[in-house]
Image 1 (cartoon, rainbow, N blue to C red):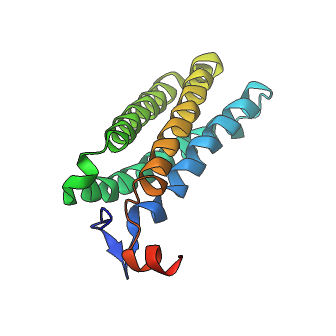
Image 2: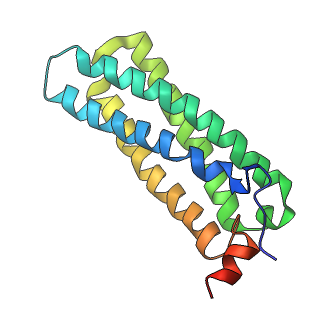
Image 3: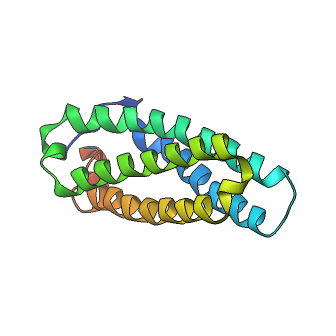
Length: 153
């Protein structure tokens, strides 16, 4: 029997439904930071702040779903990939929260080079965390229903 996703909607795990949003916002922050580094247009730092804010809000929702799954099935907690995925995402959220805070306090001058560097680190962490999430689903079958597993054969 596969490790189960304990938070789902009509049998569909909620965590995978939510993660595309913070991923898009974190990558979007990097893109708007790069555009700001090439332009004096005040739109880009404002867009970066909105991207960061939306990314943090959606990351919190995805984290709630992920933590529900993590604590809902001991088999998930026994996976090294699950721990690395969780810790990596906590570090990612902390980096993004500090970045947003410094942007609000210091303004657009923070973005180049420090904010841009933090955005690059965040995207690198995102790749690592996504890899670990992939490992949980495709190697350890976390959240994959038995019906899906058997019908695919």
